[in-house]
Image 1 (tube, rainbow, N blue to C red):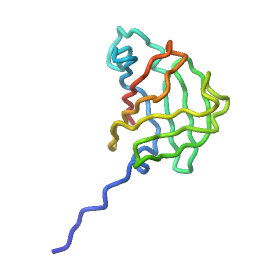
Image 2 (tube, rainbow, N blue to C red):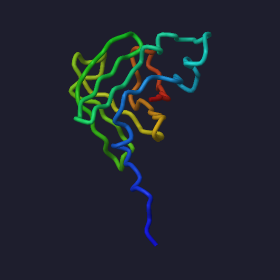
Image 3 (tube, rainbow, N blue to C red):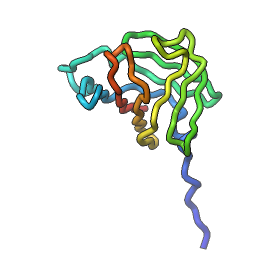
Image 4 (cartoon, rainbow, N blue to C red):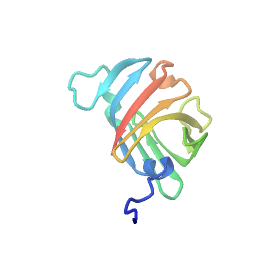
Length: 130
C-alpha cells in the first residue's frame, strides 16, 4: 500500500517566514496580546521577525529598532541564533539566542535566552504568528 503523506517539515523549514507578535510575556507576566486594547506594553505591536529562506534575518524590536543579519538553528533544532546583527541591538554584541519552544505552520513560540535590557532585564517569551 502506497503512502501518500509528505515528509513532515523540519523546524528549520517551518520557521522560514515573516512572523508578527501575538503574545509576549516578561518574566511570566503577560504584557502584550494582539487581541487586547489594554496592554501593559503596546509597543510590542512593532515586534517582527523575518526569517529568510536565504539565511537572512530581520528583527524589529518593541522600540522600533530594526536590525538585519543571518540566522541558524542548532541544538537538535531547539536553538535559534540571530547573528551578525547590524546595527547591533543594545548589549547583544550583534547576537541574540532564543530557545524554540514550539513551531508549526502558523505559530512560533520562542524564549529569549539572555535578558533583554530594553525590557528591564526580563526573560521574554514571544508567541508569533504568520
